[in-house]
Image (tube, rainbow, N blue to C red; front, side, top):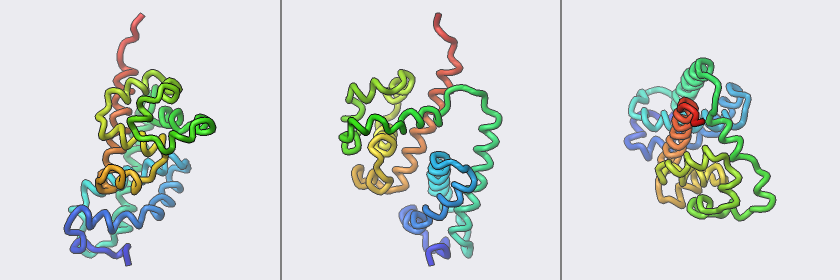
Length: 198
C-alpha cells in the first residue's frame, strides 16, 4: 500500500516523488479542513510537498508516509498561521493571487489557457489588466519561477502538465511555484516598506 512506503524504498528524490504524489488528494482534504479555503488549501498542499521534497531524506524507516506528510502539513499550517497573525496589514500574496485568479478575462480570452509563458507575458491586454506592482514583480522574477507561476495560475495547467512542458520532475515544478510565490511575498513586503515618493 502506498501509505506504507518505507524509507528504504525512497533511495532518490524521484522515488520519494512517486510515493508521495498519489497522496495529494488525501492531503488536500486535510488542508481544506484546516484552512476552510480552496486557495489556501492548495497553497498548503504545495508547501507541504515542497518541504517534504527538501526533507525526504529525514523520513524514518518503519513509519507511515501518509502520516509523515500529514504531520509536516499540520506543523507547516501552524507555523504559517502564527506568521500571519504577527504580520502587519498590507499587500499580500493572497490579494495578488485573487487578482490573477479573476476569471473574467477568460470569457473573451480563452486562448490564454493555451498560451506559453512568453505569450502571456507579452500580451498587452492581459498584462494591462494586472496591478502595476504585480507587472513589475513579474518583470523582476527569475524566468524559471515566473514561467511556472504563469502556467499554473493563468494557463491553469496542472503540476504534471507543467512538468511535461518543461521536461522537469513534478517536485521541481512545485518547488519553483513555491519560490515564485515567496519572491512575490518578499517583493510586496519590500514594496510596502519603501517610503512613498511625493
